[in-house]
Length: 421
Image 1: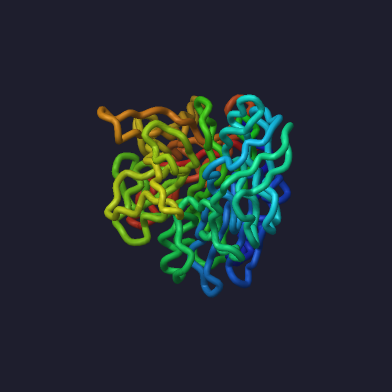
Image 2: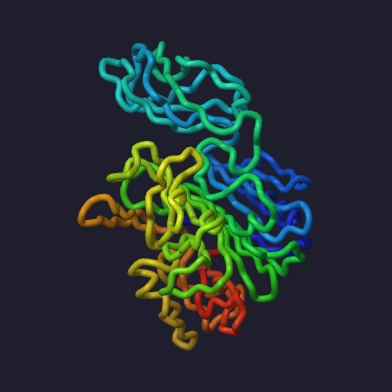
């Protein structure tokens, strides 16, 4: 894992904050797709499967909503079947779809090709912003052969770049609504319209070289919110790993489920209404007993409505556990306080676990951990303090507000450590 860039500053308005974030992101390899501060909309991506979109109210905003998708605008969601297998192809050939009017065309990878005839493929990228889509069967180019055509399903709203309307949106968000409903969505909740005391941006990669972007905003003196998009450090070889989370207030007990969202958080508990949209999501496909059409997992502990675990296409999202507050690692190590005198600063990995609650007995398996971010007890530390452990510098923040003052932002000694380059 490698932390590659860090920047800090202050911003006077939410639009200023988003603009600063996009400036940092594009400097570190992300591509800006949309930045419309007049209408409170912004979108960016890196690679072919990590797309993030943002939305905020244009008048006196209080929250910044964050959406995760596998494309931008209208794009390729599913290859329904191979219409014609062609000739001369090989496994792992990458084929590009022809036709339509995309900004960037979708791609697929050949999974099986007996005798050079394509039999099965998987979607590699949804493409970007199809203004119109090609008709079935869709021709392809690339690879070692010729003649492969596909029957395809495209998703997303044609002509729309609104957050939440892109191809294979993870489902944690709504498109329409007031600023009050935006505060119930995933993102930076209840941070006000500024000015903000400070922001801290971290960029880097996991061990496989896949990127992440982590954000801390100090929206009031000593009070933080956290947001992140990236790829987890996967255990094993499975399809997915792209994650997206925000944070909200209401405390950060390490043992009690609550509507407070603490990043990747398996103790998040919705009470119904729009708060269920706060849940963090992780892309995951092909897991045991997972919905065959499903592409997303959601970190949660309980729900009061049946649609909670659906993505924007209506497919079930698989339950994921662990994260910052839940599971044996957080519960076992989250209470350990640091001793500055002896340079003892215990930290714990933010680990996600797949929960198969269909089989009997239920099964749980480790999926991986968030790169370059750890849980830590911050009782002995100040906001943004840097501690050096070996050759690494870690920057420490409270989950929300350090201490127990009786305020809804109190998070006791629960904290987060970020690796800083």
